[in-house]
Length: 54
Image (cartoon, rainbow, N blue to C red; front, side, top):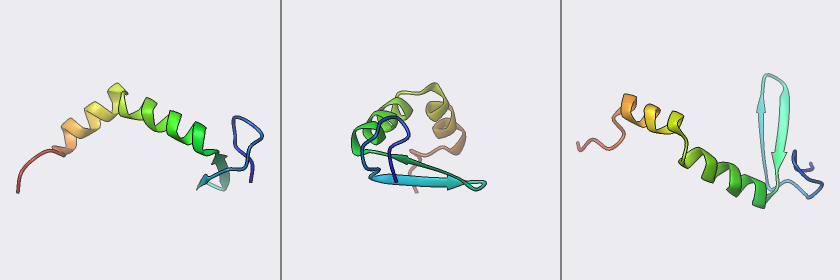
């Protein structure tokens, strides 16, 4: 499988509703960094109370 963004070999792939997408290592890392900095992730962490102690 090839990367969705470039023509390199995909290091990671995901499938949802029959659609399969691959990402090379560079683009996978970039997407993870974007997610880590996203407002949506911060909101989700807040709703799930991810940092709570048990």
